[in-house]
Image (cartoon, rainbow, N blue to C red; front, top):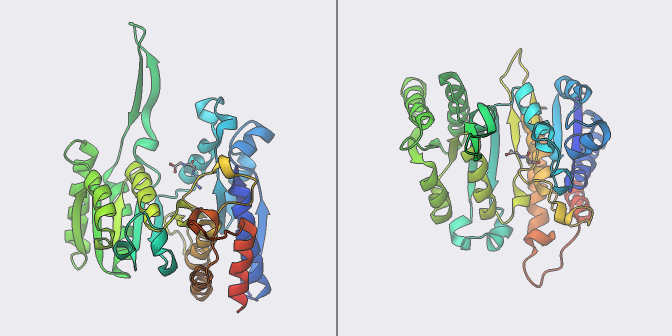
Length: 365
Ligand code: GGG
């Protein structure tokens, strides 16, 4: 039986609660004989700041580098609002992405049939929605230098963030999007703002050239990122794969989340380049730490459990297990089990733990 090393970084707020449910599901797959899943747990984000004064220790980074996959919960919260910017909770996540080279963030937005009524849009606009947002994750304005706030001679303060993309960075993320599209409905929409940003001009040029040279069989549309946001709420099913930069990808995937019923429904995979047949990978829900509901057994663990399904598929090559988990999520929702965020009025919601238990019952069924 194959053996897999997994680092759990539950983080802050609802992170530990949802990560616990994914751990329960993983343990079930172990008991079912799918593999030996060796887990280690460490701190990240605010929890690591409290214990060690930094959002990610070198030891935790080392464990992440040695793992076959990292399962990450969420970081951040008002408790750490006063810490210096360089060591804020989110800096731990950004360092993991950068140091593990996780440049490709896959964010599937699927509207489960039972949740069409919970969407922010009319059910007919989202029924059957299966969209993949491919977000560039290690470049752009998140990492570009200079990044600073300086005080001017007249006493005003001036903030600078820098958007930087190279040809190589754009090519590799666009290739991920085109390769994915070939296995789906063969369509890519590339979103940028070439009308106001030089990085958008380069992005569009590089995607156009890569498409012509290597992916002419895939449908390609260029769309301004603001128009893409509008189209997502007007007619989301027109899209198959959307590829975009770090910041636009973050924003567009939150919009897409609301089409699926809740931010608590969106999983993600952050993947590095394939080297010697393996690739580094981190799996996390798109949602943050939701401090307002932390510790109340009220969070939806499905984005985290869906992220585990992506780990089974992309890191462990266990596609059948991933399909089985996706099917268990579909059946659980079809059976009417709902956490508070997707319950709607007049429906009794279950807690985080009960949703995890319901998924395991469906896996056993
Ligand atoms: N699970 C996602 C999470 O914790 N996000 C908080 C965060 O650091 N976000 C940065 C970003 O991706 O924009």
